[in-house]
Amino acid sequence: MEFGQRIKEIRLKKKFTLEELAKRTNVSASFLSQIERGIVYPSVESLKRIATALHVKLDYFFKEERVPRKTIVKRDKRERFFLKDSNAFVEILTSSGIEVLMEPLVFTLQPKGHTGKQLSMHEGEEFGLVLEGKIKVQIGKEFYTLEQGDSISFDSMLPHKFRNIGNGKAKVLWVVFSPRRIM
Figure (cartoon, rainbow, N blue to C red):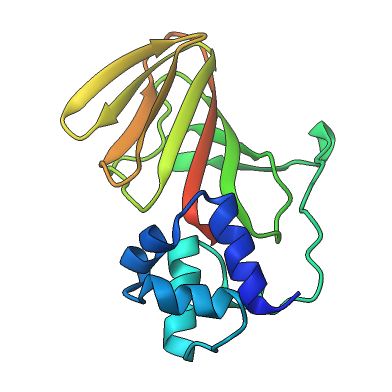
C-alpha cells in the first residue's frame, strides 16, 4: 500500500474530513487529496505535519505491513515497583517496550499514600476507577473524594494528583491516555 493510501486510511479511521486535516496541517485539502491519490508527493515537513495531526509516527506511512498490536500480561508477570516516598505500590498492566497510546496502572496506596507531593500535568487524558478504599483527587484547586466504584476522567493538562484518605489501603485503576505514543 502506498503512503498516500495509508494517510487516507488513518484519516478515515479517525473520521477526519480532508478539510479538517487541512486545518490541522496547514496544507490545502486539494493537495491532501492529491497526496492520498498518489498524484503528488509531499515534502518531509508536510508529511511530519500530517503525521502529527493524525497522531502517528512518520514511519507509519512507509511500513509494508502493520500487524495490529496486542499484549497479554499475566498477573504474575506484571512489572511492579514501590514508590517509597509516596507509600504507593504500582503495577504496570501492559508490556514494557511496546509503544502504546494508553498506560493502564494499578496503584495500591497505603494509608496516607499518594502519587506525589507535586501536582502533575502533561499532554493527554486520564481515567481513574477506585477498586478499593477511599481517595481524594486534586485537579487544580478543586478536590474530589472518590470511594469504591467511583470513577473520574479529566484533561491531563490540568494539574493533578491523588492520595489515600481512608484508614485502610486504597486500590485504584488509573489509565493515562496520550495523543502521542508512550514508550
